[in-house]
Amino acid sequence: AIDLFVNGKQVEDRFGPGQVERLSYTKGDPEAG
Image (cartoon, rainbow, N blue to C red):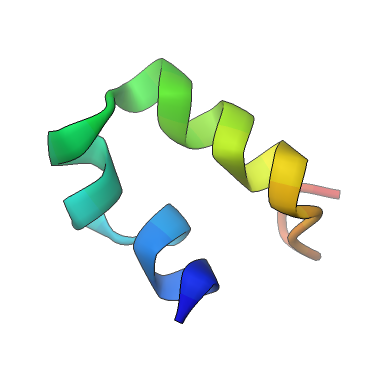
């Protein structure tokens, strides 16, 4: 569920394009690296 939100648009609407990237790295998604 977290991955969907991070990679989803819901997060973008709530936070922003920059915040989304930060969340991805914080969560440690495989796509982010």
